[in-house]
Amino acid sequence: MARFFRPTVRSFVTSQLRTSSDQLGELGKGAGKGGGGGGSIREAGGAMGKKQAAEEEMYFKRKEQEQLAALKQHHQEEIDHHKKEIERMQREIDRHKGKIRKLKHDD
Image (tube, rainbow, N blue to C red):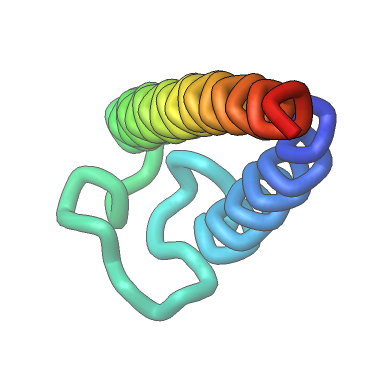
């Protein structure tokens, strides 16, 4: 089941990275391609702009990792829930098979 989600998550992450990097322009070199200034420090460029851009990238990378971890946890909880349901239903099937055998034996 884990193999099923890997390509989806991988393509999501790749597309998000591509989208965000396309709008940034060159990190720390002033305003990005999106038209937004990004603040006076980023607009000025230089070392401070590069530092701020790097901090922003780290922030979003951490956020993305947190979101992926939460998604993975959610999927694992769903898998566990479905496994428990399968086991419960299998016990019900086995219980009903026992009743059917008993009825056939009584005939």
